[in-house]
Image 1 (tube, rainbow, N blue to C red):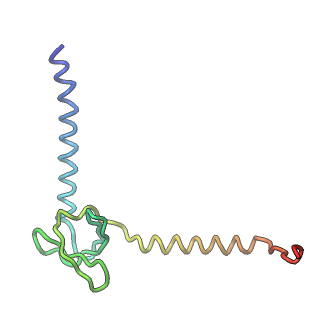
Image 2 (image 1 turned 180 degrees about the horizontal axis):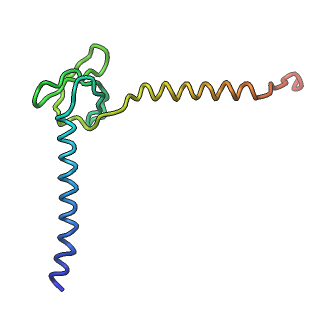
Image 3 (image 1 turned 60 degrees about the horizontal axis):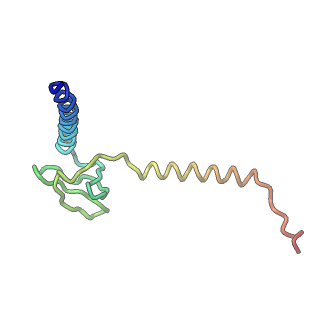
Length: 114
């Protein structure tokens, strides 16, 4: 009975350790593969573009036009897709929907209220 209990406790611990090790390896690969021009998000939620990735432990991120800050590579959480293009496409879709709705809607007659 005791060996079965030991196995039931050891298996989840082993699987959890493997999952954590795999996640750390993926994060390390991401941080090592960064190149200028990559859009990234830091662990504090700051979005920017990699300006210089030539240092071993740090990376320069352009957070606004002409504003470059230096960060530890470990502070990079993930690469992101260009959200600006997505927002522009969504706004264009919304404008098309608004125009279509405006063309279909009938004008209200406010003169009857007086």
